[in-house]
Image (cartoon, rainbow, N blue to C red; front, side, top):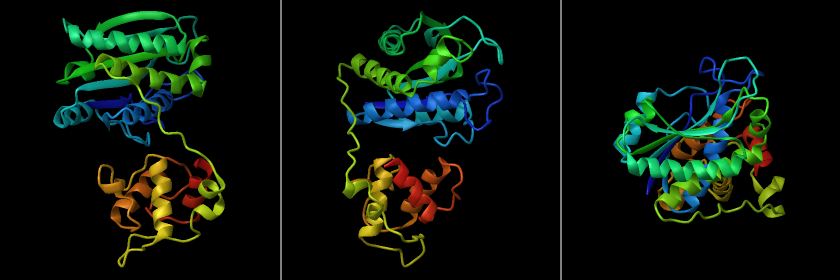
Length: 285
């Protein structure tokens, strides 16, 4: 099963509007949901393609997203969003709604129903029901396509839930469960990150500087860096043998480091493993 998924819009002010009255970016809420959904989907054996910019730095054009999903041959596309009525104004409205394309698409509507039911239970907000619209994401895709709006960023009630990371994680899990249920599959729990002295102590990551310059750095220190990146879902070469964990600091590992760096402010995005990158990895492991 191939699932395409995206966090709607972009972060870091890359999308005009799309924020709460307190200037919280919609993408930041969406991203936490998507990360949680991906973890469950992958643990359950699904192939997953994320179509937004995982760093939030750019708002990937809708056409680029749908073209990639179509080319990849996705079975499902879910676009994760959170709603607003009027930018910059708090209100007493709220609730969760889920969209499919205008027209009659029974199978997609059944999928949306499964996802919506799970989201409503996870979020505990007003059920606004299933709706139809003519969104690019639902119109220009050649697979089941669903767009979720799991709460209002400008609602005095909903924002309290959206600011709760445990609720956003639960929403992501709910989306994954709904997709899997539609295909007759059960959701598996993502592998937990067990912390131990061996895995999280300062000695677990080398005090070295690694660059992807020939002859490429090799050895157990590089392997530990690769394993740390992979545990945070920054795989050197996803899908390859051991997801590219081979003890060699080549271009693919440097790219994984660069992707990790792009997600964290204050770290230079140069693909070089050094003190700042090591420090941030240790904070997150």
